[in-house]
Amino acid sequence: MTTRTRETMKLKPHWSSIFENGTGARLYPYLMVMPAILIAIGVVVYPVVSGISSAFFDVTLRTLNSGNMPFVGMRNFEKVFADPNFVRASINTLIWVVLNVVAQLGLGLALALLLHRIVPGIGFFRSGMLVPWVVPSVVAVLTWRWMYDPSVGVANEILVRLGVINDYHPWLGDTATALYAVTVESIWKGTPFVMLLLLAALQLVPKSILEAASMDGASGWRKLWYVIMPQIRVSFAIAAVLTFILTVNNFNAIWLMTEGGPLSSSEILFTLAYKYGFQRFDLGMASAVATMLFVGLVIATTVYLKLIQAKEAD
Amino acid sequence: MSTYPMTDEIGRARSSPQLKRRLMPKSVRMALLYVGLWCAFIWCVFPFYWMIATSLRPKEEMFARPPSLVPQSITLQNYVDLLVGAEFWRFALNSLILTASVTIISVLLAVTAGYAMARHRFRGSVALPLFMLYGQMFPPVLLLIPFYIQLRFLGWLDSLYGLIPVYLSYMLPLCVWLMRGFFAQVPHSLEDAARMDGCTRWQAFWRVILPMARPGIVAVATWVMIHTWNEFLYASTFILSDKNRTLPLGLSGLIGQYTTDWGMLMAGGVLTAAPILLIFFFLQKHLVAGVGGGAVKG
Image (cartoon, rainbow over all chains, first blue to last red):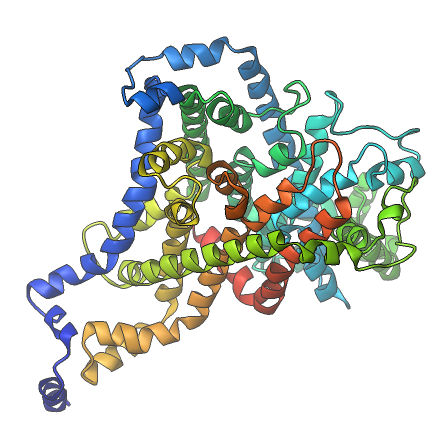
């Protein structure tokens, strides 16, 4: 066997045989990783560093054109904190994130439990419930905007027929309802993904445990809380973190339905940073908000993952 | 699965499990299950149905009040209006070019990197994959500003090729991470066999492992395609002129300040969503496994 191998190698030397031993062999993995790493440094690491640093410089169209961007320390942050819209956007972000995460996890779990059973026609239901996840987000948002139309929107018509409201309501045009109307779309769009993650986890729960619980007479709710939840805890936490990140970064829904309006009533930090950057063209202020968002995301994610690991260790 | 917490019953049920079974006969539970399934199904699918229904309505029915749930007459006029103009084709072509380039570049780069991270031990072989995973958590709004400054500096604003590095920033890390997962699943023995037969390490990778990992590569490539096809934020910020718009951007441009042709817009939505839906339902198993695997391992 060995002799044959040597012969073939001698017969057909391939350019890649320089990676077989010596320096070539040591460099081989680095060479394979290199292109991706170089690009990643160029398009991820460098922009992140430069994005954070531009929060401390005066970057506007004027300074960009002159090429001279003075260092201003914390002044961008001071300007942001002094803006009443920032306070508004922070509160809205909190509402937006809490509502989205709670509703998506709750509904996602409910859907996963519904779809978990193998009953006739379950494939049909499972495919149908993935529709919101698969539809491109811009298309979904525009469809909802059309459904919310104040004069002929079908959402109004359905709610009137169900007796929830008496007359058509401009859901996206009213400062009291705009944020919540967008939240409904976002929940609709995000829940199937959570459902998918939890469904995969549910299918790994051993049947024997559930049967044992039923034999002991546990009711549905108790089974869910004391038997199923501990089993799918890790997936649940991962779904929560992912939903959190996706919600904070969900720009399309708010931008294409209300652009943060009316009167900043649906402004979140993401859209505020976007407006600072690309409507006021004060890129320094935009970077300041983006940096705060970034720090918040990193802290929240890390803390949460640590908590889960600690729980795991028990 | 009973739906109500019946506290009194729990106590009794504890002592005799059979009693609880009788409280909620199987047929009732099944009926409840199907009611739940249908409610959820309608909630999930209705907006999609409404988009299609709107796109098939004639213009005069569009603004009828109250709107009828089923179109009274069906017409393809909205699609004709949309496709007769050159604009839609142009947007579609732009999207296609962009999607193809981003997919090819990121898959080529991710294949070797993912493989090396899965199989070789080297300095950083533990830290790099984690970095890749964190790489996609960076908020796009933070990257948006430096990208804008850079593209402006390079004169690449308002161009399709300027968008390629931008898209790589959020596709490549995920791509490498997923690819690494797929390569880790290909058994080591195959590689060993190839090496025994005289393949060099590169040949073993190129000729044996790569074809084995093809389902994984297809799944990753499809993910990149779907995300690039749907991307809106970067495109809307960096593309300024009409002729360079991508499909999602073109669609959002159909919203007028005062009036919007919703029939045409929804027709455009159907046509934008169609390729994604087709790809998805053909490759459903692979894709779902991919996202599950990638996310759960994190």
